[in-house]
Structures are given as C-alpha cells and as structure tokens.
Amino acid sequence: MSQIRSVAVLVGSLRKDSLNRRMAHVLAQLAPASLKLEIVEIGALSHYNQDDDANPPSSWIEFRGRVHAADAVLFVTPEYNRSVPGVLKNAIDIGSRPYGHSVWSGKPGAVVTVSPGAIGGFGANHHLRQSLVFLNVPAMPQPEAYIGNAADLFDAEGAVTNESTRGFLQKFMTAYAAWVEANHPRG
Ligand code: FNR
Image (cartoon, rainbow, N blue to C red; front, side, top):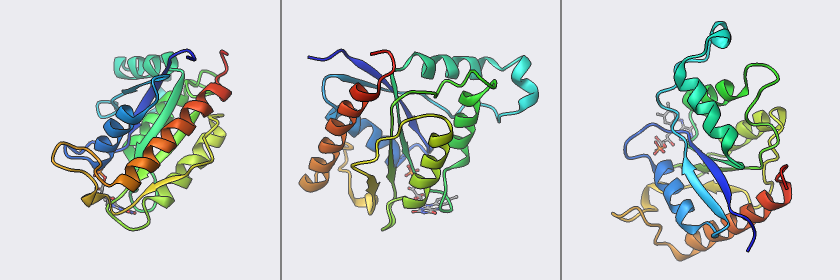
C-alpha cells in the first residue's frame, strides 16, 4: 500500500449542526486507508490583519503549523451569498502570509460544497478554486462535488443513507487519494 498521507480538512461553517461538518466526517470514513483526514478548526482565528504579521497571535501560528504539517488539504464548505464564507476566507488568508511563507503552496487539494439548496454551492466552489489557483494548490478537477438538497442527506447518526450519493462520495475520495499521490511534492 502507498504511504499514508495526512489531509488537513477545513470546514467553512462554525454552526454546531453544520451539514458541512457532517459531510467532513462522512468523507473521513469513506476515505481510502492511504488518507488520514483531520479537521483543522478555524473558528478561533482572529481576523487577519497585516499589521500583525510581525507578531502573529498564537492561534495563527498553530493553524499555520497544522496546515504546513499536512500533506494535502480538503475544503468542505457551504456557500454564503454565492461565495466562500468569510470565516473560511479568513483562514485561507492567514495561511497565505507572511508573504513568501504560504502554508498552502503545492499541497494537493479538493473542494466539496454542501448546501440545502439545489445548486449545491456551485458559486462558492468556484470562488474558492479561484483562490486556490493563486495559492498554488493543485485542486482536483474531477469529479466535482456540488452536494445539493443536503438537509435530507444525513440520518440521525450523521450517516449518508442514500446509496447513490454514498457511492459518489466514495468515488470522490478514491479519486482524491490518487490525486494526492500524483501531486504530492515530497514524493
Ligand atoms: C446561506 N445559505 C446559502 N445557500 C446557498 O446554497 N447559496 C447561498 O448563496 C447561500 N447564502 C447564505 C448566506 C448566509 C449568510 C447564510 C447564513 C446561509 C444557506 C446555507 O447553505 C445553509 O445555511 C447551510 O446549512 C449552511 O451550511 P452548514 O452550516 O449547514 O454547514
């Protein structure tokens, strides 16, 4: 079997009953054994302020360290007003600085958007991909994951019971494991 790759999972919602957090847990369960997924929390990060680059808060240092240590990144996020929730953008900005020391660069990534709406967070998915291009995160192009109508997706234990969706998510994680292996900079 190939080497185990650690994946930093960024969830773009702070809500206790977040559908996206549930999805992150499901993806961790469905991932092939070559991937180890861990959520890196972003809720306690203060707003990014460039003035603090010289003396960053400890929460930023810890966050940057955790993403830096990971082999890959997986974004699981809702769409807010057809874009990325501010809390996730804040985390992305914190990880990207100080200039020249971004923790994102070169880490193979993937994007999953989850929404109770029909479009499945398409707008957020692609706004996020725009940032990932600039951050030099090779984001898996296919399969795309716009998970719509998600309010009915999970049972009381947080499992995805719909066989077709479950199959798709499994396929997504298998493709992502191959993507991580193919694009991992450390070999
Ligand atoms: C939303 N929601 C939403 N949904 C969507 O599909 N497209 C959108 O543009 C928006 N915009 C939006 C803005 C704001 C400020 C909020 C609070 C919500 C609804 C959103 O998808 C829904 O609340 C999800 O349940 C949020 O994800 P979590 O928290 O369940 O993971």
